[in-house]
Amino acid sequence: MEQEGTGGFLPALADGIVWVVQSILMAFYNLVYAITHPGLWLDFLSWNGTTEDKESVMRLVYYGGSTELFFVAIVVFLVIFGIGLWRNSFLWGTVRVLEGFANVVGRFAAWAGLLMVLQQVIIVFMQRIFTRPDISFGFGIPLQFDISWFAEELKLYNAMVVALCLTYTFVQGGHVRVDLVYSAVSYRTKRVIDMFGSLFFMIPMATMIWLYSWFFLWRHLIVPNPSASDQLDRLLNKARAMRWNVETIGFSPNGFTGYFLFKILMVALVGMIFIHAWAFFFRSFLEWKEGEESEGKYLDRDILEEGEEPYDHAEF
Image (cartoon, rainbow, N blue to C red; front, side):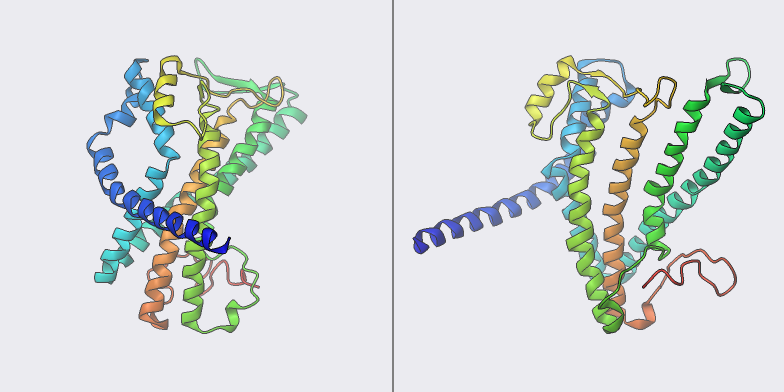
């Protein structure tokens, strides 16, 4: 019995290794093909309702949650890391670009918090002082919605702050770390822990959530509803009956109708976590390799006052 079980395990393991190697090799071809044939999956951007437009949507839906995309991401990661092993300056440049992207998006999205406060003040004034049932903005053909619409829209601002500022907060050192071991170990051991966390916690978590949120998004944008189990040929067959069916149903009769935007933010959140896991791994590796003098190198953190950082006490 044990010999049979062992004999069945080793061929399965060998098949799995062969599949991974083949997928990585095919990822180079898939990446080049996607770059040189953008019309196959981006043709819908110039929407004319043609069969080609619908098929391009279905290709985007399929490849956005496919193993092909996952292995392309792995290949890009390995290529960047391989070049970085040869030239550390290239890897530092990659870190600065990815962290800069997180900072730019986060600093811009943070203004949604101010908009949320100002809009709430306007709602209170319109309801309690002017006793108006709606709010109108603009001239000629104004933007006019019920006050409940604007009240529910506040959730969108809150979601923008959470989704688009999460990696920015990570760069700024603002996430709370529940520390039992980290502070007691050496500098290089900390960097090893950070690299391990990037590869075995951040990236797998982001991948699993992406697979759920990607198809969850498209099920609220098009019909027939795509499924994660659908193969490409099945989705292309569905393209004949494909039409846009963007979710516009609010929780209340006159409430906010753009709840599909929350699904888009969820996908953006997971995508930003995935690519920032790369940045965190690359930074941790470079700081491990170059020693303590490289800690915080090129790190762009906001300063409240001279010599004071906003998140000095984020670690416990």
